[in-house]
Length: 161
Image (cartoon, rainbow, N blue to C red; front, side, top):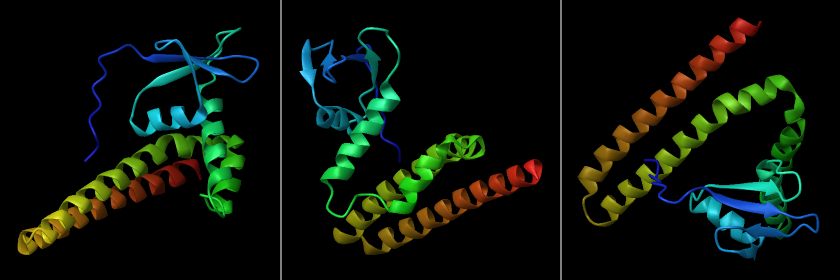
């Protein structure tokens, strides 16, 4: 199940200066890429704006966050082929696919991971029979969602072909 995030404060604005420093305006302090990564993981919404032009640099800074995490990871955090595919994202067809389907696939993954964790907790606590039934139900739901996505992809391929 997707975590609910209720935003009570206005969106956080981070200004990026020419010297590559990032300034969080709501707290009046400089922040690091690691701190921005933590905000993303905590589902805190923010925008990064160029301090001089006001241009939205959020995507660029998030790419920098991924790059920094990739540098820190032993043997890389992501498969090289995935990184190559991301570089190829300039292809409009791939960009359309990523924009349309990756968020849904990610949501399905997160829902399945959370549900499986809940089921394993039930099994570990001694509710094995109930846990087994829940796991079977959840796997069936995941299978159905994946089939729907595959059907949608096939329809798009046919319409483009």
